[in-house]
Image (cartoon, rainbow, N blue to C red; front, side):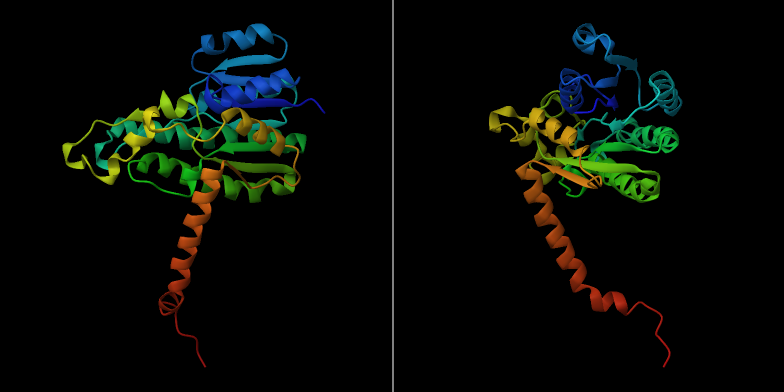
Length: 280
C-alpha cells in the first residue's frame, strides 16, 4: 500500500477524527486542521513525525489559503484534500438568527469552497490528486427543521459536481460523500438548536428533537466503518462522484430521487408548452 499525504479539515471529532486515526495508524501522513489543538494533542504525541496540526477557522478564506499553501510548500505533495469541517443547526427557518445563518453558510459552504479553490492550483501543478467533500444524504433529501443545513449541503454538492467536470482533464478526482445518520459528536453533542418560537411547537419543524435525543434510539451508522469506506474510495479509479454511506442514506436517497423524477416526468407536456413554437 503506497503511503499518501492527506490534508483534512475539522479533525478534532467525528469523521475527521476517525479518518485521521485510521490513516496515521496505517502509516500515511496527515495535515489536520482544528480550532483547538488540545483536542488532538494525543495524536500529535503518538505520531509526531506523521501528523501536522494546523489551527484554522475555515470561515476565514485568507487563513484557509495560507494553510493550504504552507502545507503544499512544506510537504511537497498532498495526495488527498478532505473538506470535512462543518456542523448542523436545527430549527425552523424563521427561528434562526442572522448570525446563525451567516455562520453555518460560512463554515459548511463558503469554507469548503475556499478550501477546494485554494487546493486546485497545487493539485493541477502536481498533475493528480483527489478532493473528498463531506456532504450528507441531506445534500439531496430535505427535512423540516433543517433548512439552513440543507442549503449548505445542497449548495456544496452543486459546486463540487461542477468542479469535478472542470478538473478531470488535469487528473484530479472529486468525490462527494453522503453519509446517513452516524453515532458522532456532530449529531449528539455539537449540533446547535435555534431559539424556539412557540408557534412551531408540535409541528414538523420540531421533528428533529426526537432524532437528537439518544433515548429514542441511536443512529445506525458506524463512523469508523464510514471513515474506512472513505479511505478505500481513494483507491477507486476513476473517482466515484458520490459515495453513499449507510443503509438509511441509500434508502432515503433512492426514494426521494424516484419521487422527484416522477414529478419531473409528469411535467413534460406543460414544460414544453413554454418553448417558442417551431416553424413549419
